[in-house]
Image 1 (cartoon, helix red, strand yellow):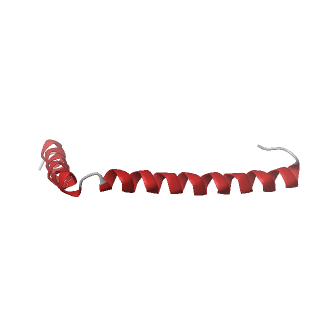
Image 2 (tube, rainbow, N blue to C red):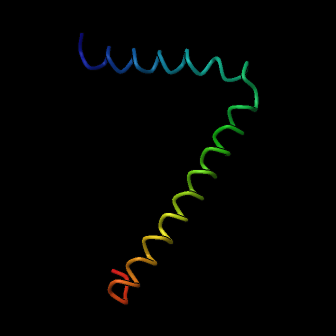
Length: 62
């Protein structure tokens, strides 16, 4: 098996798995949107907390 066979197999795998997306409909898109929004919100709150701690300790941000 050479590298071309490997990459064609990977491509074939993804092509076959993407065939399920029309069956699932728009719910996949909404799932990704909600997940990314929640992750971004959590990340921003954590970053604000870290910035607050850094400002209290050293008086400046790095």
